[in-house]
Amino acid sequence: MNTLTELLKESPALSSAGEKLHKGDTVSIYGCSESSKAGIIATLKEGFRSALIIVPNDIRARALQKEYAMFDRKVCVYPAKDLMFYQADIRGNELTIERMKCLRRIMEGKPVTVITTMDSLM
Image 1: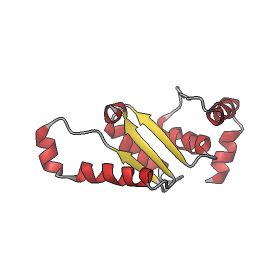
Image 2: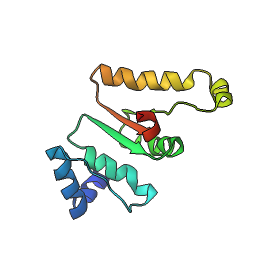
Image 3: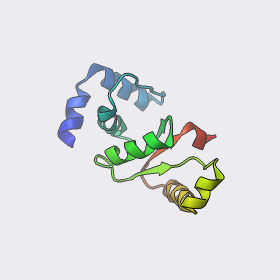
């Protein structure tokens, strides 16, 4: 995978975004294809122990987790709370367990990439 990230580093847009991240600025990237997002995130995350990725919904969070796990095994999804009670009953405490796994990695100070939604942050 290093070959892919090395090729992406040569992009002027990504190198300037990487410089901004290392200065402590926030970066938003628009217009890339769904299939290239995981590689771009992996390229930008180099040099950082942890990262927070915010996506529009849980479906996209799960899809990105599957793709990004190829680059970084230390990835977890912090799911939003189920607002529909019937869905909460079907899943049981699965969402709570996922949240606790993410929080445990963060609290222990382990390297982690958390993928979540804006609803989860609220």
